[in-house]
Length: 513
Ligand code: G16
Image (cartoon, rainbow, N blue to C red; front, side, top):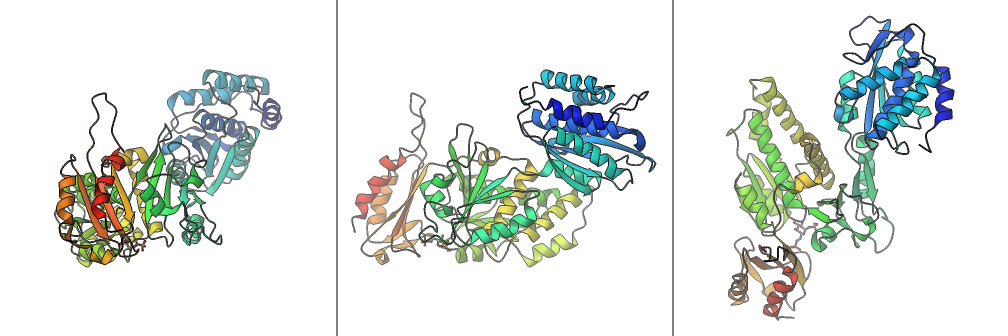
């Protein structure tokens, strides 16, 4: 209670005295009566909104000033809980008590009681968003409301004249701030420009933005660093809080990798495979909901790098195809579906809607209002996605839209399936051109005998899968390996002993250095 702003509250409360001989009640839709009686109520609702937000760890509370369908001379106010829902019942009683305190002294006492009974940490920041309808009494009442918020030191955002549903939406749909690792590259410009449009609903916090620092590009940051090292860029260690989502672009912002820290601050990566699973599922769900089940084929395209768990998960639900590394190969294969979802594990990818799929979406007649909502969401997705090529910014919005729609945190998204432990390493060889592959780069045909020796090693591991392929962009050979590692008898997981037990076994086979 040390930081409780009693003197501020007394000062402001005296400016908004309660009219005598009136009893207020937080009714069906908040307080509603003649506008001329409401000044003290609005002030006190401001105080209560701040308390409610502090009680909920600073989550945003909405306050709408309106008397809806009632005559213009009336006005009213109601509180909107986080997620855009109506105020919790027990707080309606608190609102009524607070509005009926006769004197400033009584009012301060009720405030103190609420703080004690609700165990409110008054030092927490309060966030409140406010709006009003077009009534002439609105501006004056909003000023009283703002005095209440000011007295409590709340962070208030006045949205001006808005419909009630929009206020609910704004209070409920604001996503938690997203940390964006721009790889010290051009993605920063795009993220900054996009932030101006989306920050009010999806606050973006760009990091690794040293675009002019020599040597900084992709250095210990960016999508490739995160995917390959499977760890947080060191520059984000003191930035990211448990539960907070973040994403990394690469140097030209056409790759996207997500990650988050769990409540034990453990790093979890959500790569291109996880994006594909989230997106393909969502599109299939929308198509079904719109009454378009079976009307078009939704397929997924991956490469050999796709984690075995993702392939298993997706192929149990949709057609899945594996093609050679390279966006051009995935893009081409995805064009073979009505809706083709393609993502490389490294975060390159997008969704293609064929012309016939788009015309089905345009002409389909939904038979229920629910079908109509699914259909318009699917059409909106087709507009949101950059179908020319994988685009980190557009993919980021796609992911955020789906997460918001489903109410998923990083954790819920991550639990779609569990990645098999895996390792991807680069090996410098004398001549990478002697490495030739078949079966979408999953098997070597040259040098002779090497695949056989790899098979002998892979066979020793449960769920073992590995391949060797020459890079098309660097003078190296890439080695990928994954396996199912069961918990040991003592219950401890062997996870990530993999590098020690598996990859080194392959290295000697590649004695071409
Ligand atoms: C390029 C391609 C990607 C490919 C990556 C690695 O990415 O566009 O499709 O996955 O190279 O290819 P490789 O393993 O053959 O070196 P970027 O981000 O460099 O344009």
